[in-house]
Amino acid sequence: MSGELSIVHLVLGASPVVQAVMGLLLAASVVSWAIILRKRGMLRRAIEDSNRFERNFWSGGDLAAIYRELTGGGHAPQNMAGLFEAGFREFRRQARQPGAAAGQVIESAQRAMRVAQMREVDRLEDGLATLATIGSTSPYVGLFGTVWGIMNAFTALGNVQSATLAMVAPGIAEALVATAAGLFAAIPAVIAYNRFADKVSRLEVRYDSFAEEFSTILERHAQARLSGRAE
Image (cartoon, rainbow, N blue to C red; front, side):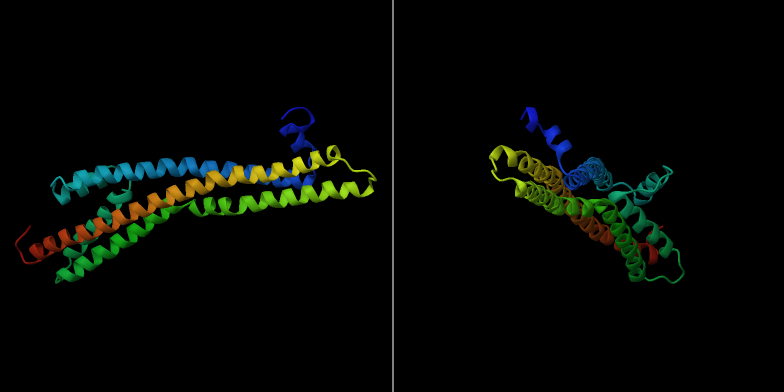
C-alpha cells in the first residue's frame, strides 16, 4: 500500500487506544522471539548432550570413571548427565552407610533421579507458558483494537450527512492493522510452543527410560557390593 494508506501512516494516524494495542502486540512479539531463540538453542544443546552422554554411557565404561569425568569439570552436569550424576552420587552415599539394604539404596538413588529429572524438565519448560499465553491472547488483543478502531470510524460518521467509502476506509484500515499485528505476534508463538513442547516431551520420555535402565544397573551393583562380591 502507498500514499495515505501506507502501513506507517495508518499506525501513526490511528487512535491512541489502537496505537497502544499495537505497541503491546509489538512488545509481545519481541518477547516471543527472544524466548524462541533462547529455547531453540537450549533444546538443541539438551538433545546433543543427551546423545553424547548416552553414547558414552552405553559404551561399557566404568560408572565411577564416568561420574568422575562429569563432576571434574567444575560445573554441575545437566540434562541426562544430570540424572546420572544425581543417581550415582546418592547410590554411593547410601552404599557406604552401615547396614544399608540393597532396596533402600536403590530407592534413594531413584528418588534422587526423580528430583533431578523434575528440575531438568522445569528448566526446559521455562518460557513455554509465556509462548502459550502470547499465542492464545494476541489475536484477541488485536481484535479488541480492530473493534475499537471500527467503532471510532463509524462514530465519526454520525455528524456527517453524506457518508462515502473514502471517508470510512482509512479508519477501518487502521483498525484492521491491529488484527494483523495480533496474528503476527500469535502465529510464531503458537508454532514454536507446539514444537518445543513436543521436544520437551520426547526428552522427558528419554529421561524416564534412562532412569529405569540405570536403576536396574545400580540394583545389580548394589547387590554385588553389599554382598561382598564387588569392591
